[in-house]
Length: 410
Image 1 (cartoon, helix red, strand yellow):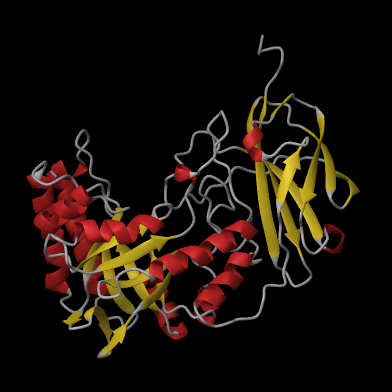
Image 2: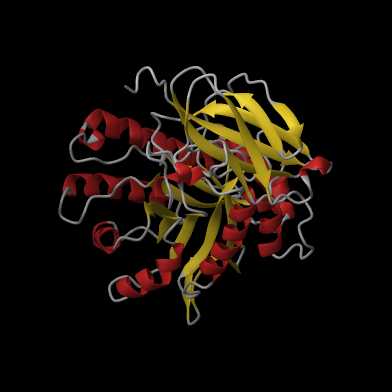
């Protein structure tokens, strides 16, 4: 880390290093390097040595998460001396073992740990600061940061006063990206230090602009998501260049969060969505137009997702594809139905468990329509569409619906 007349910069091998990053799982690292990325964020430090070796072989740097439990006032995990002793031991072993690896760029000490407002819990702040100092003492050559969700002035001020030994502050931001320049200006009077955008992307399911009456967030098509990723990367690049050190795209790979497609740039079988092409374009590696499938929207019984679609068990219904290019007759068309993730908190960062597909017979009267019988069990579901071309590119969409038994609705 260095400060000059032009602002703050990360330094790698004596040269300024601006992060073009992505949050990743275990797959598609080489593909990210190919589209122009230079850094990956690894959430799970299990087998970290092998992961760092692999990243180094691909020419990628790594931001490593050091997982910490959330802080809460009512159930303060950190108040137990035994918990802190174990955490201190784990942090010490992790940092000591990997501090000299050439692929290591910086440490992330906790992801959205819900840092308390200043003066509310000095005992927690003291223990958190001890972990920061431990990382610095063991590894003085790599910065240490922590992440916050959004940019609350109160949280930034609390971290600035309470944990000033952090080398920079990291922000996870989705729906509020457009307001970041304003927020940065409003805190500039008391926080003039650097930032890293450790997660950025489309609106998360917890901030969906439309939901059904039963609380199911409405997901954009992969085509619309690609457009939004492009717009939001521009928002990231328009931030204060003297203080922003780079950003991490969320999510490079397949991940389940509310749905298996919400943040997934690839499907689990490796097929890329248009988001992958768009990432290639915005990182400067390709300018050719996207020639894979595009999708406008789908309807179920003539209704769109905001229509609060309520159906009866075992009913024969029709779904239809609209404004798809190329024409669906030239594409592989796949449908499936999954139960809604009814009891899962949609804001969990990495929920790798996806509700299973419900066996369903789909009949295709034509490439744009499908007939099927609704599930027999009452509850919330989603109908998913996958349009694939011969090159393996895929477009996705889904639509939520609710099965209500008329016998029980009386």
